[in-house]
View (tube, rainbow, N blue to C red):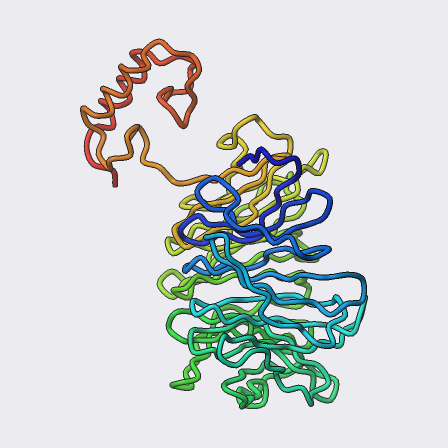
Length: 405
């Protein structure tokens, strides 16, 4: 993705329609919404602003600031050149963060007491209610997620322990007490069935489970033993969960869980010294970023059907030195950054050159139209990657003939 503007594009989120939000860095950072290959909306009125979240209705949420120690402003923008400054986050003094948005455009976030502070105040913004502080009398509240009913999942500090909480229209449920959780806990995500992903850390061990507030039912996911740390957890809408963590004895680890297949752990190459799960799609594919030896390169990876994650370097144009997955969507499309450039990777059907869903005569005609050319690549008509469109590519089409699976 490129722009004719003199500056740098940086993206933070992508929806199912491939609409992105982030910021454009010229003389100052400016929140943008990117659609159809160009900047569709650009917020210019602040000293600094940036887009953080976007839903599948092309509604983006971001933050703007007029200067150091000034209260942050909440910005709501769309993909049609329109944006509104909908609220001042009073008391934030420049220390706000946004964590989740739902399809209605309601947003949750948090602000802290300053650099290095562990005192947080969670807030919810809705179009009808404006900004609401969540359990403002607690020592600390932190919001992680919001569902389509504007229920908020997070944690609150009670007597020195973090308790998983569920906030619903002003009423707080202490999930730690309700579920008899020990140590510290947090409610992290919602799935499409209304379940809440709850994590518990007690006596050095970490446990994750899905809890359904409507039925009070619990689905146990996995217990991580003492000696594991730096957990990253990301679920899909259907309730599958990807995990990455480190083990004192085994080093970096990657796994995924689903109700159908249980807990499955990946086999990692010995040159991977760190790995972080970023997303899991509805088909169970895990997007992740790894640091690899010998020079600590950042490598974008996916873990699909095999036992190990695979590098995306070969699918990113211009042979980047480093790469990372920036964002994904529910369709499994990946926004990756290779060196300084952003690229959108989509899963395609092998040898289906016209993307019709069938390897047929249409693909042969496309191949013949660029016969002998040497400027095609693996994403084009040079299917076998030998540097020229020739009879070997034609044979690949014949060998793959028929509908895509």
